Image (cartoon, rainbow, N blue to C red; front, side, top):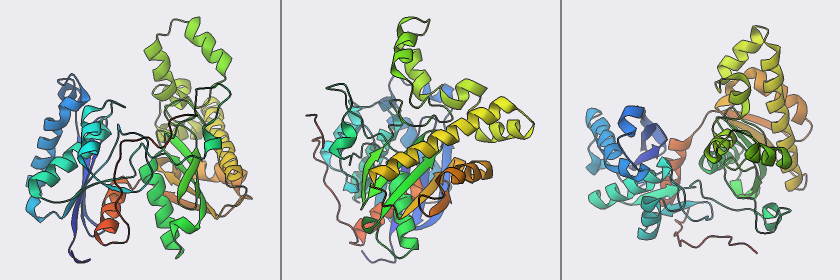
Length: 367
């Protein structure tokens, strides 16, 4: 394939939407966020049962856009429910497809990105890729160990956007991602702060299991004994406790909303509690950035602030006051997941990157 005629379809299923993007090379032709109502989704007993429904809505959208799928050169799908693996672009094989389809590891709609991309690739005889899935694990062994034998810190990161932002920054300064030490702070509904050491995310807070700073709807780190007390001496069920950690905690638990724009409005209208809570979250993020600075042995080329919250001036100004003496700060707001899916496929198709093969063998199995 020539470098000037590659058409790539990115597929990113989420909890209540399916995002798709069409790219000519790395240039976006269009992006669409297909919303799915709760009434539509509750018809399906399992998330995996949504496959046909999501495929139909995707195909209908492309038909409305008058896109002939025969013109697509490659399909690139968001991943999930895989064994922990190295970062990079994967050519989806049968093993990856089966793991994602079964959702035996994690039940999440993002896994359907692999399923849909692979099936469309088979039908139209085109390659299908998965780029930096949520299961990317590049931790140093020191980052895994906890004080309780058998309990290990896990790599749960916004891997797709984290890597894409780092690659974009490196390109911007005419460097290679693999030549830099970076701290990337992705601040959205969840907040991940990762240390990128020459192309590897060697440490990060766990955005699923309750680690690092609190976020708009996630608790972040909670002292262990009070959490144990909450589990055994309260009216909360096990599912409610888990939801408090990664769904209903953080700013939402304190203020009743996880919309940062609403929080900023509260502050502007004189709500002192809102200011304290938001400032506390920013403080915790700054501490996490400091921890990643140490993980890089205090050798950091730049700190990159990204995600939706990076659009908020209050957030950026307040955070910079804590970290301004650590390293250069680069603000790159927003998320680039569809772009990242297309870019990874494009790099492989143009031989800038070698596609990896999913083995189904986790990179870490414990000591």
